Length: 166
Image (cartoon, rainbow, N blue to C red; front, side, top):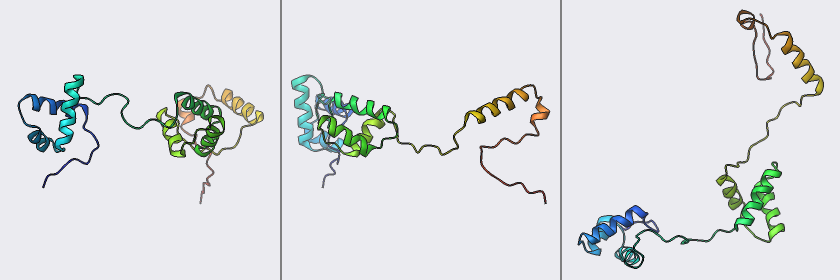
């Protein structure tokens, strides 16, 4: 019983190994058993090499992308302009603008390809102009403090906590 590979195709380096073995006068069956693919797969690689001079896959093989480059660009621009939109809303915008139907997973994959990820916004209190003025005033009062004075200060991340003395 043979153990054939479950992959749909070999990598370019594996295809070149196949060509090297065949040029080294091994039979296609021997190469297929050694590498773990079917004899017909070895035959396709060899025929591709004889026809094109290359063992690697031809560019353009495989499934076409669901979005055109223009639609992809539109998706990215929309995501950057509207930072609070999720993948479902972006998908609906793309469909209404171009008529192209894509899954939300496709939208996420395209954005992840450019390093755009969904993030939860940080919840914090908005600073008013008075807060900003008070902070600046505090900073100017303490600009000349020495290290020993700063050693008595506790810096926090605006979390609320209770210090008990007894």
